[in-house]
Amino acid sequence: MKTRDGGMNIGVIEGFFGRAWSWEDRHEYVSFLNQCQYSFYIYAPKNDAYLRRKWFEKWPQNIRNEIQKLAGHYRSSGIQFGVGLSPFELFFHYKGEGQKKLTNKINELNDVPCDILCILFDDMRGDTSNLAEVQVEIIHRAAEISTAKQIIMCPTYYTYDPILEKVFGKSPIDYIDTIGHLLDANIDIFWTGPEVCSNDYPPDHLIEVAHRLQRKPVLWDNYPVNDGAKKSKFLHLTSFKNRPSELQSFTRGHAVNPMNQAWLSKIPLFTLLDSYRQGDTYSPDMSFDMACNTLCEEGLREDMKSDLAFFNKVGLDGFSTDKSNTLIRKYSRYHQNPFATEIIDWLKGRYAFDPACLTE
Image (cartoon, rainbow, N blue to C red; front, top):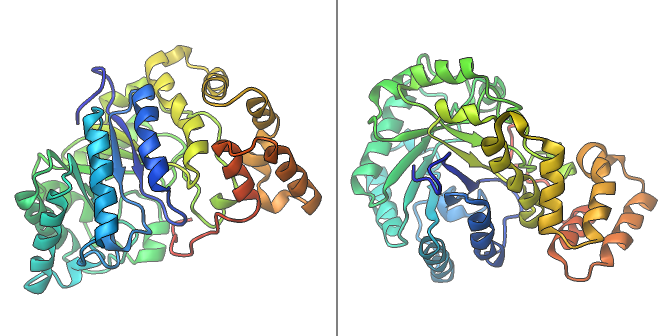
């Protein structure tokens, strides 16, 4: 994966359920990612049906036009642009017509075009004995057709977290090892760590996973994402923790899955590079302050800091109606400020939980 400054390959994957970002926000992120020296952006919102449940259908022309404009904006700004395709349960009916549909879809993505192509088998059933073999066959076919410079696979079982087998069925025996053995060594693999939403990435864990995958994983970091039934009640604004610079030695890259709130996600995203660059001197509190001071106007940033515990720890279920209304009035003072608007929308329940998100 290409770096911006010879350091860690870090980027954003818009890969969550629920209310997606606007096209305007996605375009605006070009300047933000350049400011933070991120390397890539991957378009993979779960609510784009033409990448998931209706993946075999072409995008309507208006969506296709938006994606092509977005790809051009990122690429012209020096940031790699990717798309995440989730060919929903294709592995149950891949031969014949399924293979033709895949070929057509990859050719459509070639027209975007993409620097990174992700084939994502996450959050779908996996209870079939030959899951790994068929998924590898699908990946190899996609790679054969794709013009993307990099291919990344997300397995159905992308962590050891038992929640995946509880929701999507028991993993086939030796699933991870079989993928590692059969998958072309030039193709990367996403991994979320010990859990779906991992607090840290112990070196021993990453070494063991790399051995089984026969390559270093690309981290799919589910912080600060908040699309789950419980997590949607919170705004994860605090700095990244437990992402030390040593992760560079054990991984091929680091993709961050942000919150449904594009602007508020910038605050934690701003801090990740500090964690990598500053090593043992990294202070999450100082990095958080720097993020707020850099990104938010005076007054707003002080209000956000004072309310941080409510957003990050108390959550919507802990607010009385009076407290919620008080906060809405407070942030309504910042007319049309996108950070404040997202806080108000969250307080008013406009980021409703999507029950399609099952891994919490």
